[in-house]
Image 1: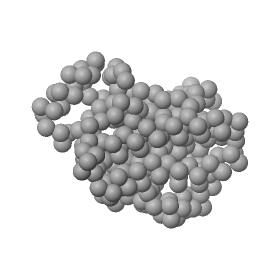
Image 2: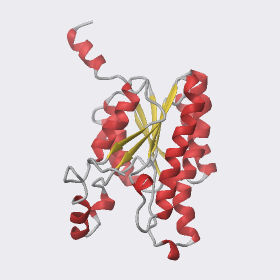
Image 3: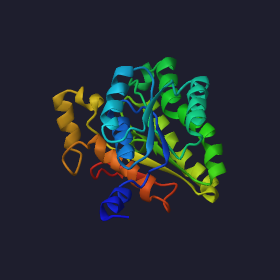
Amino acid sequence: MSLLEQEVVSVQPLSGQIALVTGGSRGIGAEIAKELAAKGATVIINYAANQERAQQVLEEISAYNPNVYAAKGDVSNPEDVARFFDEILEDFGKIDILVNNAGITRDSRFVNMTDEQWHEVIGTNMNSLFYLTKIALPKMIEQNYGRIINISSIIGQSGGFGQVNYSAAKAGMIGFTKSLALEVARYNITVNCVCPGYTFTDMVAAVPEKVQEKIISKIPLGRFGQANEVAKAVSFLAVDGDYITGQCININGGMYM
């Protein structure tokens, strides 16, 4: 093997692995998909509705990794999850890395929060974790290998005004992670959380400038995080996290809860 060939192999540690990233058409999810693809994984991007954004991410990734695909489906709907997961398993035969990233917000003070706002957030952010992992896990157990990485949030650790539904879901993800990690460690399956702090995504960009400044004033590093910084933590767990399980990695600029 030439030195050039050795270098190519060395930068493709996820070659041959199949990764599913939910909510992968934008923000943190899109950056995670790009990062895993850059490490050589075959990446399936799940998205709910925005086909144009999903296609854009596919085109960006295909410039350096042709093994990238899209799977449309509502992760809060168990029938929809079963449908697109069956298609993935039929096409690829396995799943090695599951990144539960899909999430929405429906902010409201609790006294004004509707049943719909509660159920929408719990359905997408929390119930999806159960639906997706329930299907992926038997395949991971069968192959004696798997990496499950759940994207929680600093709001799941510290709470957030007007975000009881979102905070409850993200805190639930942490408990889910710690408990499942204990059950599946014997099968060489790791389960971890990444908890982003205030990350500059479309959601944060829409916040008024004065509010942004107030948030930044509370961050020791003095800036918002970037989506690719969260993605690098996910990549680390997928590539080098063999002895890390049941943990929460905080990517929050030094904020303490």
